Image (cartoon, rainbow, N blue to C red):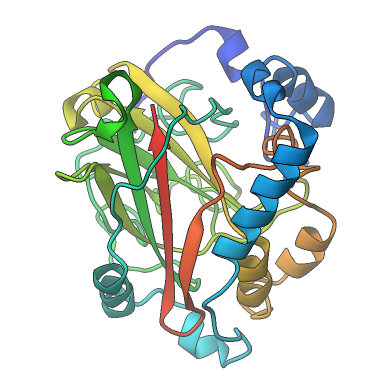
Length: 306
């Protein structure tokens, strides 16, 4: 990991991770709101009635299909490569209809892309689909297995599949910590990786379901690049945004309190409409469709336009 990519302070002017009071990067709600007010003005054109209907449809489409997560913690505490691969094969992502560009969102204070000093993108081994371990390690992170299928389409080409692009994904672990930044994990690189999109424009990752930390709705960060070469050599970022996870699935996963000790409490204090990132529109363009169950794992699907 090296330091690279100096960017204007305005591009970092948002902190979406306020559960670590000792972090000098954690700047609080006021900082979040100021940035939120500067983005996604175009989405304000949506009428209140239409927004409510869309949000209702999204909730219906993404909240089903899961067994209760009340099983033993040994079943779901550690990601299963076999389970994730099976889930991915049975629920392969395909290009679905999109007609708008996904909103730009903050990368938060823990991107690990060199924009605030720490950089994993020039590490050998960062191009990988399985992000359940630190690079070069075989020790898996605890959590319910999760496969991420992010399909990227090109708005300039009529939202055709964007094959050969690269997606960098990162998110917190089951306890709300981020590798490279959180105390005790500064020398770790788990839950971070880059994958090239296939012919359908889909980048697939094997991971674990993230926890819910205080102040933020459960989410997954991502950056889109034109190629893996751009992603790993300080190339231009095409899109920075976040995936929102549906409430019903989160509630089921977080029943496993031994692996997700504080997530139920934290989630109960939040909603998509009050979240400081998704609250502007309830995450209607970023709310994933999720299938599976807490035992065999979940498949998270989202198609976006860039």
